[in-house]
Image (tube, rainbow, N blue to C red; front, side, top):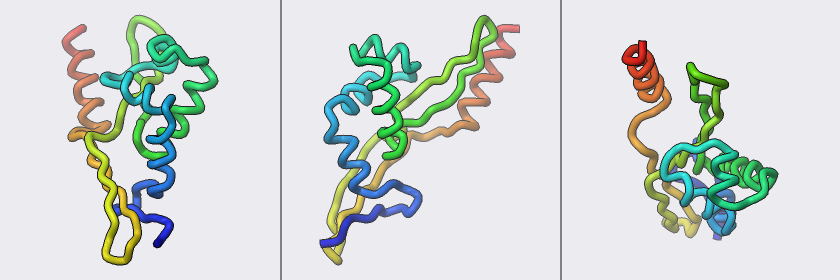
Length: 125
């Protein structure tokens, strides 16, 4: 059996995704990310030490399950937010007995988020 591949070569190795999903603290963070949150919000809602939150966010980011972006705030300092970057994960075995992972992503991307941001800024002015 092969070590594992992904259906899309831009996706992380199967082992990286599986290790992240196996980690109970990573799963707690994924569950908490129903909506974007900062690391400190995750620390509070997940009841995890700050260093653990950052380590797990890095692991989830390496597995391409979480993405990070900066929210520009008019009324205070900008915030780094994290959000889930998948809607579905499928693990399968191909004809050559190698594992494959398929990660379905939410529709919309950073451009859509930026357009929504500028629209909201315009409405506030």
